[in-house]
Length: 297
Image (cartoon, rainbow, N blue to C red):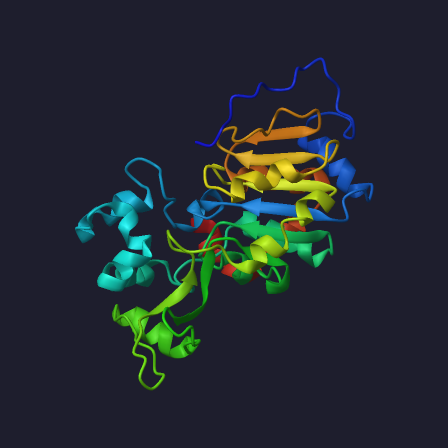
């Protein structure tokens, strides 16, 4: 699941920047004002508590759920050539995943709280669910590396398509066509399909992790390139914190890496407690999703 063969840093090797390799030490680092340019990187694991299946978990992953659509192979739903031939399966999926059907998790709210406190430099996400935006992270500091449902356009002439009309088509499971005279190309959300280039915003901002003073990696297997390269761009000595069920990439190999091998929600709650932010975080999250949804998650 994206973990390389590098060895964990030896327990006898002390951190260079943190007082020790714990969330308490990360919290002290933040409270001491040493983290003013935090860069967060998120994957599907941050959204599973919201009810969105990740892509690869056996029996529960998104690809497994696509079996009912009789695709030639699960990945076909995100292949541009297949979409041109048969867009209907994608729109079945889009109806399930479309923004508004799910609510942000407390991990999303934690990232939004960092932004509210002017500590978040940038969020890189692999997710297409727009839950970061729904939590209140400003769109101008979000890099949606694999695109999102936030906008859509014709795949031929690239003319943008209206949001309201798009939602109507998605709710009906009806693939829309371009309204430009003489075009009639298929309309697709600005999600990166296999065979498509990543958005320019990803490449325009690849320098940002090297300028971070703290890197947070949440809920990603780091198995998809080039996103998987981002944590490694952080400078030596910059703390990197992983919130994930298992170790991934080369995280854990540097003296200032901190591994929180638990759910993203449990991990950010513990960090918020060490920061003295837990009440603010809980209040902010409930204000976003409501008491009933917060209790459900």
